[in-house]
Amino acid sequence: MVFNKLLDISSEDHLQSALNSFAKVLLVSPCLTLNSAVIEGMKSVGHSKAICSVLGRLPIVCSLRVNGASSSPTLLCQAIKSVALTVRSHQQETNLLNMVSLMLSVSTPKDVKKVDSIAYMGIE
Image 1 (cartoon, rainbow, N blue to C red):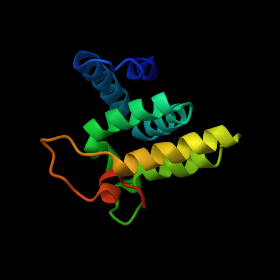
Image 2: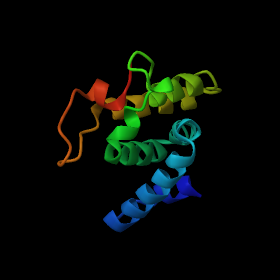
Image 3: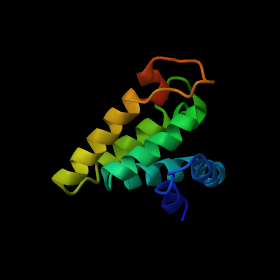
Image 4: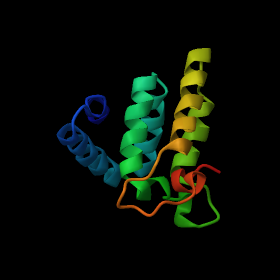
């Protein structure tokens, strides 16, 4: 249901509601939620844009690391890697690559200090 809300972010109110729902699920299981988000984003361009929009509003989520160690990969990077192993079609592969490209080009919200986009999204 959380991911269904993400697809209807046509207004700021809908986006805020989706962010709240997504954040609640993230608190319960960040790894599973990010894996599910990447899988959802792999479905279509619209799904990818919605996931990237939400992650762009929650930059701290993109910097969470496996085991909390600074030398470990980010949870988002780990999710992308694990989902990449499950790609079953050329379309899924294209959607996943487009989503990663969008993640790397997403701009930060105005109130968040601008940082290097690769470090910002946690892609290594």
